[in-house]
Length: 218
Image 1 (tube, rainbow, N blue to C red):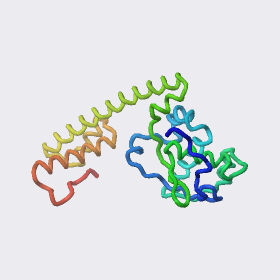
Image 2: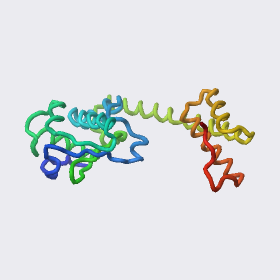
Image 3: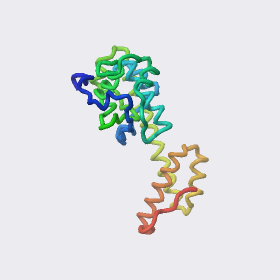
């Protein structure tokens, strides 16, 4: 997006005393994104969004922890809490904060307020190019480390699945497989994934259990 969303372009619903804030459900972004309160956002998104928009997104994320399905936001109260007290109309600082969240694809308008992302996507290369060279280099270092970590996690997942399948084919039940994998220090989520995968593969290959769900670990 080449230009900022103008506060003047916002509908009247976004300049009212109360806004309805709903979660923007996006499985793709949420699978790779970052909590607005995370060090990643502070280090790499802050220079793009500016402090007021970053703090607004953090405020929304914290409120979603309590009201995950959405909530009403008192604009004057939140603006004051974020240090943006003053005029709240189309020319107000808080209204410009809302506009920036929309501009960068972190919020979207609905008839009574905003849908706001619960997780922020990785900063794009186009936006990174606006940041100081030192920050760009730090992001490259972060991305390299992240790829290495993801590779290690994938390798661990494949090994856990292979071991789980071997145990299932030897006749061990789900509970026994669970205990064995945990004794080998695989993380709980990896163990659950491995058991589900191994049982589904075993049942599928044997032709049994097609009409019912395979058992899961207790």
